[in-house]
Length: 278
Ligand SMILES: O=C(O)CCC(=O)C(=O)O
Ligand SMILES: [Fe+2]
Image (cartoon, rainbow, N blue to C red; front, side):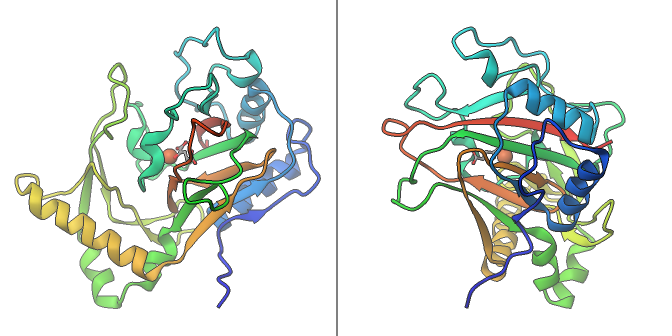
């Protein structure tokens, strides 16, 4: 049976993200809260244009601005808050290899005064150049799992049990040492700020249910079992990349992972920006 996902709808066909009117910005946001993952195709943007678009649409609450620009990377591919994933300098190890495991970007956010754990953290990726295929010879994709659907697919008893669970999300292994990433405590069942739908807020490597701090094996098993249950009952949405795509995801609704490709054979340049909607 063909799976029609709520995730991954295309919006604003034929638009130019550098020339939007307010109504179109609102449409992007509404579609994103409604669908969790959206795509705008056929864009032609510099890093600064992507940053400006994000600022105008979601506000100025961005991270990573203290990074020095890389003199060996074109200024079109980087700006204060935008950096290039992939192998922009012909690297044979992709920069985003850490993202090939299921994860949740909010876990990596730095310490920010007043940041609400339920804040809407949007990440966008813009494909400048993408590999034709992944390591399995399949089309090059990024994958998403719908954590609202995952919650709805649990039976009532499981939902009730999870209502009581809090999870401590430790800084993921890939966080840069210089950045202070605090442990974030979050209820596993969380209510979306805009749509008020209930969903799961999970984490993988770095997550420990509160109360299991001194039982790491039990904590690991709990998280693994929960995530396996989610994967067993929730179809995955795979976004097949085309050059010019801008994909947006709402970290309050989905987890995601990149898929391995052979960087010794293929070039990937994907611009990344994260912003908390304010
Ligand atoms: O490269 C990808 O496909 C995913 C990257 C990712 O997880 C991220 O930028 O947060
Ligand atoms: Fe990510």
